[in-house]
Image (cartoon, rainbow, N blue to C red; front, side, top):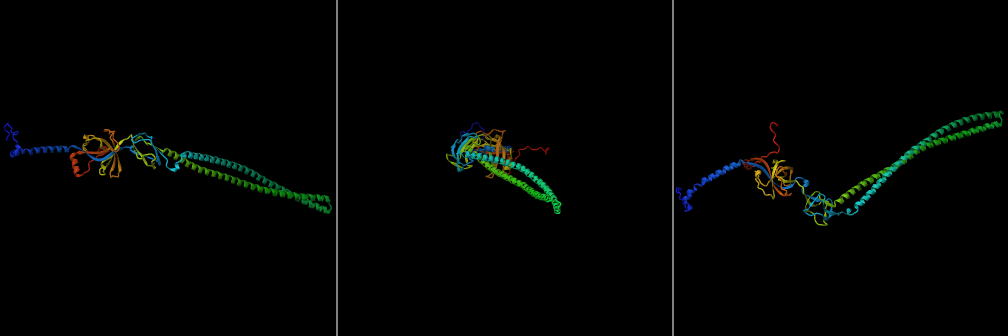
Length: 449
């Protein structure tokens, strides 16, 4: 029992059947347990001082960094009926390749020669506008000729008026001369009559002077009549001058009215021409929309419309396409309480679905199978799920993300914050305090502050 002899009997006798040996040997167990407990406690104390990286975890999925490289649907701008498919699901297409052909379903576009007839109407309207231009030019020439003729006619009438004035003046002088002659003839006649009565003159001489007196009277009347005629002609010349002015003004006004009428018709024709040009452009563009083409290179993923003869509406989705060139990113959603801890440039580690990994959230350096990224954009408003959307791009300084990743794959994100001791993180978790965080900008030295 005292283990003095070198001859051992433990293997010959089962000591567990007896109470005394059990009581003796059991007294060593508490001492060994205490050692193990102290060793374990010391190890925990050492571990508690190890660095721990605080983090914010969130779920997300793989997407594209650029909106124009994300999966999209190809829509039909016009309503139509599917006539022929040129692609299959999963097929790669280049930008501009024809995907399907649709036919017209609206009755106003049924005419196969609609575009040609519209172009003929356009040519007719252009010819009409050219005719209006020629008409306006002809009216302008007519107005110019009328104005030139008006000037000549006015000059002619003014010359005639001047001639009338001179003739009136000449006839007035003739009348004055005739009046003087009749006055002289009258005096001579009265003297001859007095001398005839006295017997100093013969009857023949007396009758000659009386004849001269009558002739002077006739010449006076003729001169007076001529003067009145000249005055009447002068009045007619004035009237003619005024009439010429009014007549030509009326003709010019009528021609200009015709010109403005033609101009108004031309402007109306130009408006119709512009409308027809718009129709030609619309019909030309619409005819090109019968062939629905790929907006960019990519893979046809799913046909949302199928069959031949199926009718589609305007703006309805027909097929979805995924671009072949993409800049992958992760779209994750964080709680509003974690949003102040994140900003652009914060490092993030990812675990992608389908890629094996061994992750220690607080020790990213010893984690295996994770990929690095940095926060690229943060939304300013919450999404429909009540969380904020964070867009994370690959970190160009770290390992490249797998090429086999596809958009829509799940990803578990771990945003890395400040390094703290494990005991501090344990104490923070127990008290529910928020984690420490830092900014990506370098600290400003105190002397510069």
